[in-house]
Amino acid sequence: MACLVEMKQISKSFFGVEVLAKVDFQVESGEVMALCGENGAGKSTLMKILAAVYSNDSGEIFLDGAQLDERRRTPLEMQKMGVSMIHQELNLMEHLTVAQNIFLTREPLLKVGLIDFKTMNEEAKKLLAMLGQSISPTEKVSNLRVAEKQMVEIAKAISFNVKVLIMDEPTAMLTQKETDILFGLIRRLSGEGLGIIYISHRLKEIKEVCDRVTVLRDGTLVTVKKVSDVTEQEIASLMVGREVKSSIAGDYSGDESDVTVEVLNVTDSFLKDVSFKARRGEIVGFSGLVGAGRTELMEFLFGIRKSDKGEVLLNGKPATIARPQEAIQKGLGFATEDRQKTGLFLIRSIRENINIISQVKNRGAWNHAAKRGQDTARMVERLNIKHRSQQQMAGNLSGGNQQKIVLAKWLLVDSDILILDEPTRGIDVGAREEIYNIINGLAADGKTIIIISSDLTEVLSICQRVIVMHEGAVKAELTQEERNEESIMRYASGASGEL
Image (cartoon, rainbow, N blue to C red):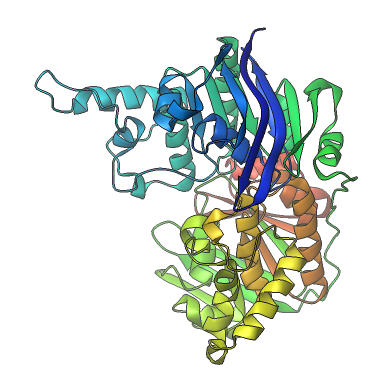
């Protein structure tokens, strides 16, 4: 195979901090190249340099054997040359339609110079159909679910005359069905000679769909290997520089009668008479396909969403939670799924983000700058957040470090009941192990942990009981030997019918 992309001795620094140090990277035509590393290893930065989002400080880039002129490279020029990138964080115009987003700045025109909306919508529909999607091209992006927005991003990326397709955590928000469709597309595109660069922390996916793997650590190249020559465990160890052990969930051994939270008969336009309970020191997982109602149920519990019917009991007593502030005061925490939209203030500092919930809960803490600094330092150390200073903007951190800040602000207030929606999305295997250890420690201290996750491996490895939802209803509660991927998927897809 011919070398399609070659990056030689690429270096990059931000504000005097070296992020990449003389990194070499190659992708051949028809190859699916995995790019792995811990959060902050430089993966996304290297790819943003290739896509001309960032400029490199030194080094050379070749496309199809021709050296690229650094002075003339722009993201749009790179797209025209066939390099397209699906970013980890969604990059869509919420107020525009699906079709307008896909063809932004490239709209088909009528002879009179006006936009040909009919053609644009038809072409968008074809692209979405390739991804197994029936999303209306005229629907506003703001009305879509997160997974649907991700599929629009993918459709936008493949709408160019692509030679090199960069995918940064493309399945983080997709269901298994959507992931399977995406993998089929990847195999077809690579079979047509495209070079595909696949960034993911899900090592099982890398083994399934990639040909070779490039591993970065602390901004330097560690190794390049054939995927067939390494195990998932070996890739993880190469990423973090040490052996990584998997967490295995044990059974709940606490007092079955010590119920801290109970939700009864929640019903609205989507949720269907949903009830569940969780106990002190228990880690309960909610599994299901995207749109099953897991997040909506937790939004009701946390006072974000209203329902037609439903009741909440905290420690056996009825509790009225009409808004999030009341939930926080009653000892609930909710780390939401969309870290950039609802989890963080991107243009605020690390210190401000980590302390924001503490300041809501403890009004008197607003002016205690010294304590805020100490609390921030403690959380940064506890979660191993890579940063330059506490004043660094959250939006300038890697996705994984942003996710750690979302967790940190809830850990700081010591919530008795902590809801974690996709808690390790975009987090590397080393950090994931750290997060699992923290979750287990919180449960051991008597906290009630509720985890929503689309990652079956995560659900099985950390959760002591798994509640499976489908189309707004609870379909199963699985414990002990009942917890397995086959059972979860059977109930999640609705194949098993009602309990």
